[in-house]
Image 1 (cartoon, rainbow, N blue to C red):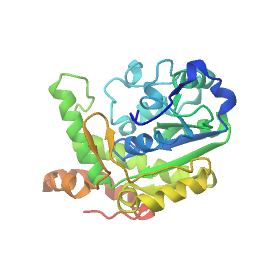
Image 2: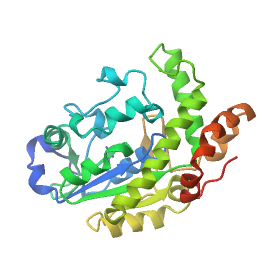
Image 3: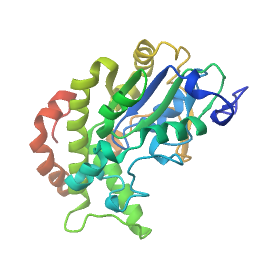
Length: 282
């Protein structure tokens, strides 16, 4: 939370259920910039926020790699296997009244009159969110698939070095990451087709290059957030404190020809999704 905030209100002592008139969900594959965006939105005096992602909140009533044995090893690549996707996209796997109650209790805001609840979630439950939350609005975020793969593989290797489970037996990390990224990209396209009237879609690249324009489109979608500033220095994931910078070129340069070839074996089957979001195969 920004130290400059004059007042911080906590959901445990406020009737958040009656104060919130809009639910704003940041829908993005991991490593797409949603953490920065959520952090920026949390500096607004118009938002109720969580300390982390919606799925990491205590009392979250849905499947998560940290608490569901069916998802063991799926951390960062849950869309790479059909059995994991079945778990994540099963409406019966979610207890939304319990989740909403937990979110509201743990939420915080800079002002008691805040009326927009914000959190970020994966792309495979948008229909459930639209059905269960009043006045749901969505920010659909995508990023260059190769940069995503590089970041995911690097994070998975760190997990493996710490002897944490990563279920990629018989697969290269790049293949598992590419499968996850391609499925997420396809799902975002479907999300826009079904729920585009309730949201907007933009790329990580546009967010980095044109933060003022993206901020204005968000304000147009949710007019209550009239003080949103995306061009500010923020602490993200406790690792750096900076304005948002496009890291694609640096990350893609870390992929060698063999790794790109592994990604392309998957990506070639998803040309329509690449075209839809304006990405090219390397």
